[in-house]
Length: 122
Image (cartoon, rainbow, N blue to C red):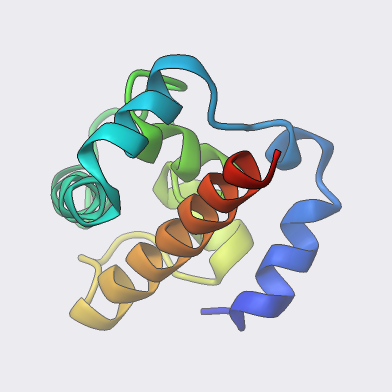
């Protein structure tokens, strides 16, 4: 796992990762439901879509939009086990530990907070 400051600096240098923004319905959903509810959804998505040791549709299990967490997952490379390995140094092939799940949740939370704050300042 990576230091979050180092991770976010690296993500900001990626044209693909930095292209993701919360807009429209995804932003409205975060604002209306609130961060605690959205993070609860994130925990569920992590448990079902990332935590298993083997994911039959790995690399395709996370939509690009439809929920603020999905956008955050792509923006932070928490969308599939391949990206978790490349960007976060979390090896595939074993179930995510509680520490790994908490780390992924912290990454998503930081991105969501930054994006929500950025919108409120505009």
